[in-house]
Length: 338
Image (tube, rainbow, N blue to C red; front, side, top):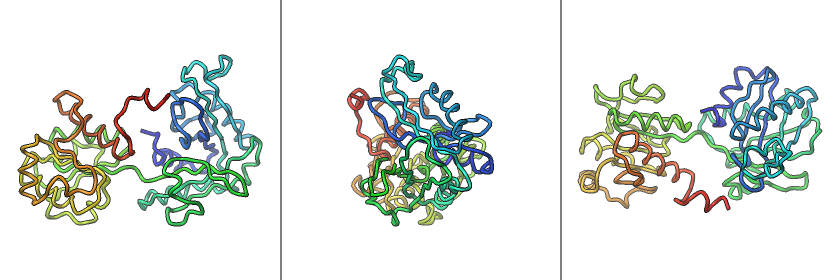
């Protein structure tokens, strides 16, 4: 998917010397396809990377991006889906979306995107600060900044999600950024394939751990990193880089060994495949309990969504994992979009 900020940067970096414009949602009122902080890049030849709506706004945004490139000025656009005369009315969302478009120039250091690339490559999280300015502001004087978590000039705890920071110099949009989520799959059988594929589609990094010769074949996991190691051969660094894990070796001893290694690290989500009586056997062999894990321990793994095929099991596990990683609670969309 090219909606992750890392994916946007991968598209941009090889062509960084070309003319580009960054488009970012700064505010919404009512419902909208994406939220404040969502970003998209436009190339001088019209190519768009990422998306800020369901597809209808991007065509019009491209026109504004071209204007911003030509004038070297910041452009601000508002789409009102409640106004029948507005370009966004046909989206039917009924919300108001404010978008700021900023040309990437040598004078403004390409809005600090190189710093973002370096942070992601080193696995660092932080905050991206974009000053909120008026339309027509000279983009050559525009200064964006990326701050590692420990060096923010604002209270980092106030920006778990994108928000506005007000200071004497004016208002800034503060966007919390982190490297893509990293899923570890312990067991490279064929039923792990849909989990790896779906996680890749979500934009997550995937590593498959399995020391067995006939498992975790590269052809079955084309978008995953494969580690042909047993649990006993794993180092602390192998596990520390993970955010979540699914244990599915289909072997009691191997699952127990994997859980014992994983338990020593504060992963947000750990799932163990199999019914409750199998869970109890595996935990007993590992000398652990359901309370041994610092994050969510799901066993039997996943949500009760129905279905028994590997793809349905993968969906139930990743849906639950996704919710945990994003701090979500299980509720209907109409309950949170009123």
